[in-house]
Amino acid sequence: MRERGSAAVAVLGPLAVALVLAVGMSGVGGWLRAQAEADAAADAAALAAAPVTFLPFGARGTPAEEAARFAAVNGGRLVWCVCPPNPTWDPRIVEVEVEREVEIWPLGTFVVKGHGRAEFVPSMLLEEETSQVSDVRSRPEGDS
Image (cartoon, rainbow, N blue to C red; front, top):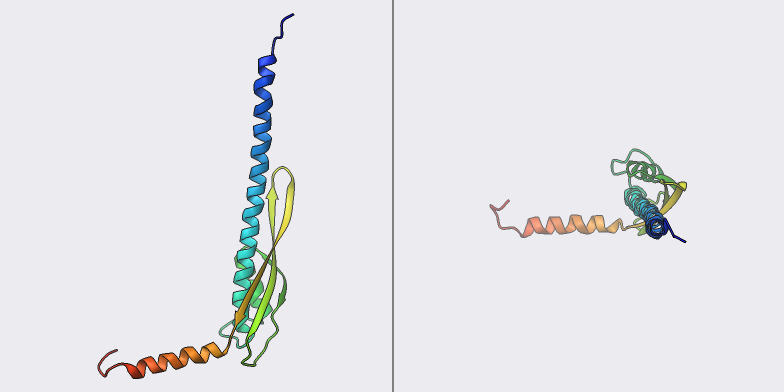
């Protein structure tokens, strides 16, 4: 009895396994990339909102609106923002969550979430101003 085609099965089996693994790795890579982009969008949103909790600094709206704007510019959507206005000179921490959709073929569309935190210390504004004034005073006359 001849075993015709057994070589084809021996070759096609590992080829099919390799193909399934490649598709799976591609999906994992896409999800990891989307997760990193969601984290970056959340960090940008938190950094944008943090100083606006103290003063507008040219922002177009509230701290949450500024966070939403920066999340959108970075391809995400703001889910929540802990960023209440605070006119005191106390340090504050802004926290945000951003979500982003990722399509993983052949499984469909998934939502990944990123979290960001930013600290803003208003008194550092005074320290920066003070150091610039002292730098100007310490220069010899005639230097610019």
